[in-house]
Length: 328
Ligand code: NDP
Image (tube, rainbow, N blue to C red; front, side, top):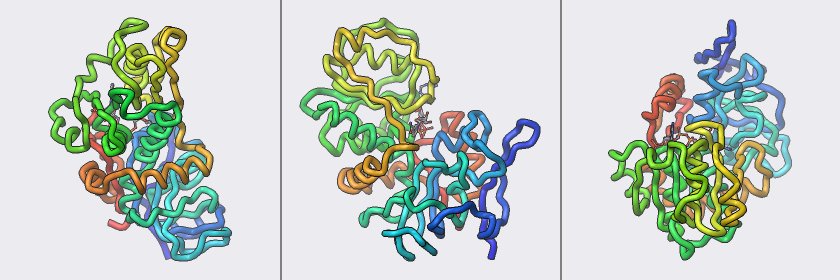
């Protein structure tokens, strides 16, 4: 029995990805085998299969940092045949075969049971981007940011992390300001719950080390000057979360927001987040994310379309979340 997979290979320094037929014996060791139903294309997947960043550490490797599906075989305590499970990050698409395939075999510790309210497709509509958005919201809460404290800014608003962060935060009662380079998408953003939309160009150039206070909190997936300016504009004792580098991986700011305003910069990592943090994030997604809004962020493609979607991500043409139906 063969299954289809998007296999990344490297030749003369060039990374490419193509669909191949593999057999179960080609899978890597693990105590749970999953019949994958859906995966998703994140920014990191685009980096991986384009070779723009060294996400994949060994070739050939099945790409895809997420998957959701049904357990086919398990020797892992607590995980049974027929369970609906998902995986985000860990070694997927780095050192272990990933989710762009009809089958996956992993260590059961990497798996989270999909909350009842979500289908396997919903789980991947959320995917790493949405789970990272939830980790960011949890960090704001941990820092004491409540709706009463004031506006929360979300940068990279049309992206995966940004879209889901807006939906969660607005559902929790925050007044959300969305920063975007695609002002023409205002209907989409207000539909997700953004109360105000600002042009990302107001944040993307070098700014003052400290600036008038605007944000009680912020969810940033952009980095670089944007993150430095957001920090400079954050209110006394505000919290800014940083998970991404869509503008750049530099942080050209000053310490003034920290030492004058007691601002907290909270780093967010989804890949190696401890199990308790993952379970908490998925449980909060189940209670706090509106499924109607999630559906609005989502489009579904087949496995063969993944490389083209990755290209569109770098052109800034992908809105929200792209789910991959691995059986289409
Ligand atoms: P997307 O590609 O879906 O979204 C990124 C968004 O950033 C774009 O839609 C765009 O929003 C904005 N953007 C793109 N280029 C620029 C630029 N040059 N300057 C300013 N804004 C820009 O990516 P994801 O949401 O999936 O991921 C966002 C970031 O977060 C990535 O860097 C990714 O690697 C990182 N990430 C990190 C994780 C972690 O564990 N730390 C987990 C998940 C993601 P708009 O058009 O609205 O301006």
